[in-house]
Length: 96
Image (cartoon, rainbow, N blue to C red; front, top):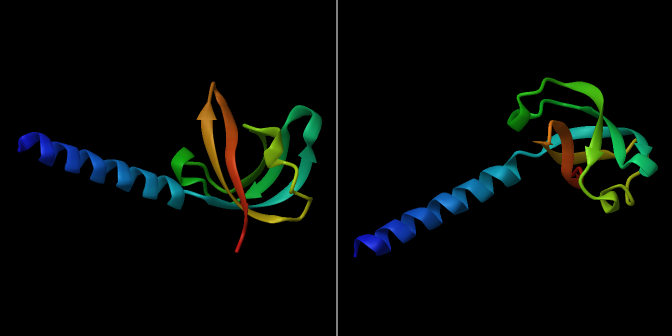
């Protein structure tokens, strides 16, 4: 019986972690796209998961396909993470 409760507790923890990650999207505006180097310049608001204040900076993107639908001036929501000592955008969606 204890193992059932542990499994349920673990499932609840995983669910809460995935929900909080989805909520940690930051807002920004595309300023420049550099497809050959897989980078995008964003003017962004606070990035809570990185404890970063609003600023404009260049980010590497995890996958070049993330850049294809973008154009300068687009308002976006994105998720950035620190990977290998670099700030990397791992998810981008159009702002609502």
